[in-house]
Image 1 (cartoon, helix red, strand yellow):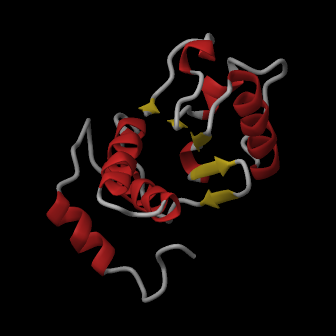
Image 2: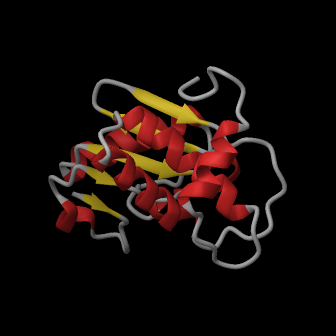
Length: 150
């Protein structure tokens, strides 16, 4: 089960496989807000996972990319440098593409990379934008060899 949380009562999401809060949303459930730094995000995510009995968190972090936090491992995936026109829909893109990646058999690490990459395509457009499969494949083809999962 993948959930984009709303509000500060995360108890209703107990035992979810993945929660995809942004930095503002995770700060709403913490005793003290954190800054957008890898170590702080990782600690906060583990705290929320323990407190709310969550399996994994994907924290979307705007210009810092996203963090996939699991019990045994954390991956911080930076954004690729580009001009940002509109962040509307970026979080929705992350959860949608991540879910499709998992459904298609990708490991969580690769699905998270793909989701972050797709969100990067979306924020480079004006207004809300749904990236197509063809557009995403074309953008991925432009990456240097070995760029996925670095």
